Length: 500
Image (tube, rainbow, N blue to C red; front, side):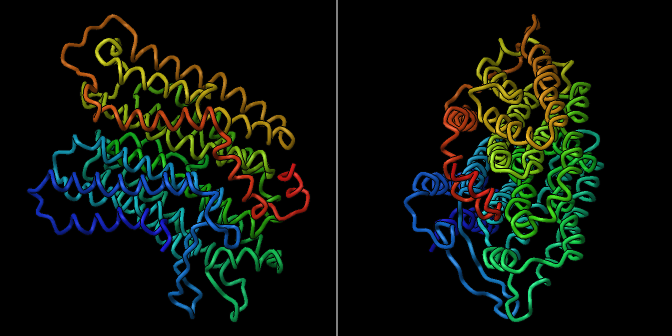
């Protein structure tokens, strides 16, 4: 059995076991959630470390395939390559950290941990799945708990509105995506029809989809996946949703779930309809500039820490889309790096903002100031996280954004120039100003406390370590990505670029 089955199956099995435990056994419930997510994380680390030693089957490693509904071509098929190995590692780390920082939950703990584990297992399974049916199903399984958790454990006066808005937008995106995936499936002849992504990719490379069908299917996939990633102007659900969500929920959704749309474009849309993709990339490049500039300017106006982080998160997705729009090896490699880096960064910043909010009972920046003296550890980690959000060298965001900008320069000079301005100026202004207003000042805080024990410090240190390791050694990811990009770019020119 593939270790990938254990990695995403263990959180789901743990959630089922917690269902059987009486809600009064709070310590046991939390302990099981921690153990299940910890073992899954250790499994993901082992898979990542031993990735190059595993046998290769059709370009993937740790493959397991079991037929399920053969009449429809549905099978349980999992595997990893350079595109999703980093995402599975990042997702498992974020999931464990999210469980660790959830000790402040005091109401309906049993239901909270069940939903959190379902989110974790669902999205890890979606990243590991090589069957389009299970890829979509597992993502939806992970998505539904988000709506419930914001409504039940959410924060702020606007949590009900945020729940309604995020449900409406993401349901629309999922519906468009479902229509596009079914239409793509129906393009295959009945006798060879399958949901297997590997076989579909191989078939559509040999037998191109009809032009009229591509004109319909690709925009459905582009905007279906795009809405799930908060592509401008369909982004308004994200900042308010994250600001209203419990910290652990925001960590997993902003850090991990939101990468599903980008992953789907790279895994499904680009390889199967590469010629049609070229017709949409100019539009995509202008839309992602809306993410970078508009959402960055909105972040500059925020006076709430969670709203600032939420808008910053949406702005970062603009760089990921820009790498995809470049349609070249350098740009897409940068996108995958950004996906991993932003997952760790978003999880870290939402975890830290949740800690601060629990200490001072507010997320308004005006209620803060001088907190570094009272919380030196939390403050130091958050300052480093905010600097990482500016693209500072030494953190994983820097090589990702640099590769995206290099890759997009050959295609969109004007857009790339504006994106550089957004990254250097706009992001620098709102992040450095936030550092000054939150952590510096003369205000005395007698009622707050820092994370003192190693156990309380560990989840933040774990996420920060990931940012630094991949920032200093990006080849841990890029060397694996390089092996897998020929499947995304079928043309001989692109393959030659990879080999160079």
